[in-house]
Length: 517
Image 1 (cartoon, rainbow, N blue to C red):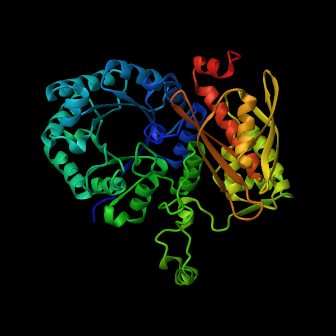
Image 2 (cartoon, rainbow, N blue to C red; image 1 turned 90 degrees about the vertical axis):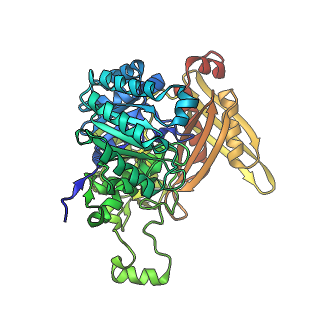
Image 3 (tube, rainbow, N blue to C red; image 1 turned 120 degrees about the vertical axis):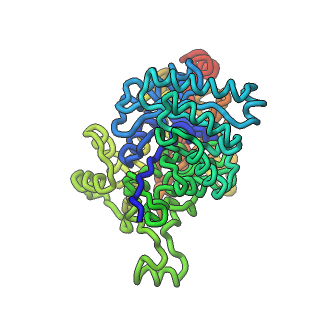
């Protein structure tokens, strides 16, 4: 039997994952996710694309400065300006990596780049050489590699490795290939790039045909040593290969793949929930590994088997990814010591200030809810105050509604300019409270989507509301929690407006609040 290889996990949740429609993370949220990924022990965190915007640059800079352990990577096109920006954002990282890329397929060369193969080859080589002036760790990606000429790929990979690339990435950018095809491509590159032993072979697969994880694993079988993926499979279009699925496939089938990872799997579930909460993208119940139904057994035959021996229908235990079978936590009479112990058991480490704030929230919720579960605590942890100024704070709401009366809502918002109060009618209680908030802030809010779900079961379940709004071509999401679903909805709406105001540039703020910024 061959010696087990350790596959590097390159997490792109903060870069490619943030390109999921409707996802807009603040720098604070990116740092929080990156810190969770560091506890998960991913090998590389791709923190963002610094040249894309000042906000992206600042987020990469903060992640590079604050997150220790993993390699921190920043994306850059194959040109000096992008690489300069990437290095400026990365330079305080403990382990920096510049990740530069250029397209290599003929369709991209003709219609996007309008360049010849020779020009692309030279630009790629020069970019890697330039990046090596700043960082010893440089990754080169051939965008749309799976639709590129194989011999041209080998030629360009040979050139960039000679120029100093330490990792070569082979992306299935549009999710086009099948596992046998993609595995064959990795094998061909290994056999036809003469200096391939001087670089790590990486893959980055998209899920347009539902093959991202299968293609990534086929690549591992054929010699890839790094897999690029995202938590919960976030990403453009149909998303990226799901980190949790790739990791647990390798973990569960070690003998088959003769490979493993450095991932601390007991942190998978917690990291997944954090990403879901901060991104506003819910995990479908039937999602492999981390969906609510992943370890649920409805069939009586299945239940009987699991009770006698869990291996009858479970190929891995929920505890492996950090799910406790007994999730009942605490009640209103629980003390601070018990609360802190439970947080540590769940894998959370908070400073004194954060702990004081969270314990206060816990006691307030315990007064309204008979019993609290792990999911309730997780929800409170992810509902942290923003590090940016809150433009509006909901201090009061009142709703009158019924099947034979027009829903009416009144709200009171606190701002630096004073208190705002408005009342409006609507088509149901949620619509009424949204209209009252919109009237109070004094500018039109374009609501794109709204979701409401229970965090746990029971009549006193904590409700979680998520709203999406659009401003200046950007979509923002926010969430609210309460045992009162109307209050949760109102809090989510105000939170989303605050996010929009914090991220939009001054001209947009001036337009929406009449110059009172």
